[in-house]
Length: 347
View 1 (cartoon, rainbow, N blue to C red):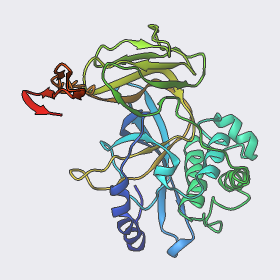
View 2: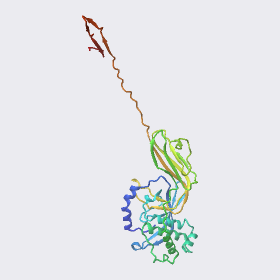
View 3: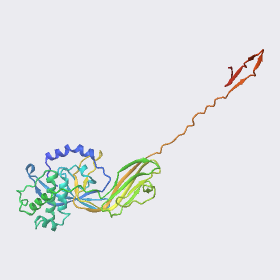
View 4: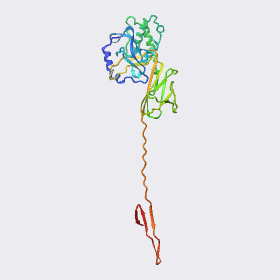
């Protein structure tokens, strides 16, 4: 596919630990397998002696049979047919100049037809393979600091490939913000208590008119905030879930929508599959069956125990006074006895 220098391999290996630690984590899970490498034009770069590398596009096939055309944004790293990829974010890709790269994509092939590219770049005899190679070269100018050797035949400023290269570098001066996932559910996870409403979750889909199907693996009803049953199926709609028992519930959404140009695709590394692979960026917006996921972690409802307080009854106190007696004009006070809790005492 291309000549890779030892220095570039060293850089790739040095970044290996960081790449494998990050992996790919996203609630929007468009995925695909690299099945074809498209293009046949080799170009020469000025760095390190001008080794020849191939300019290519990579075709990913999704599980649903759709096709995604991508460019490479990670030249030193190896990839090959059979490698799997998941849709990710720009932060996860951690690629320099990716906003400028996305501007290049919007101005070149295959977002634009080859006729449109020829006109824009004043390159009347440019071929599709040449357009692919030059677009890839312009991308690497930002992501990998590779620069096209303008002294090589066919790559100078007066050639069709040279004109396209200069045109694309000029376009890159107006970077593009990261496009959102075509379909997502936010937040990705909410914790709550079984038997209670947990939410809200919100659907995001582009275009907003696209129909969405939402299900969950527990058969739990979806409701609005007031507890009324609803069918969540539209952009911006909020919904809640009431888990019938403690445990995790997976929420899945699907829509037939276009993944936007500029979304990145990353190889999910793991302990069992640690080798990093080239990072890819979607070359043109493509309609696919797009999934998104979220989850609920429901804890068991707390158990309430009521303990009766002990009751103490005090025995009544009885006081008895004897009759008053008068003897020789002297009044004799009666003896008063107190009976309390079974004891008799003289007062």
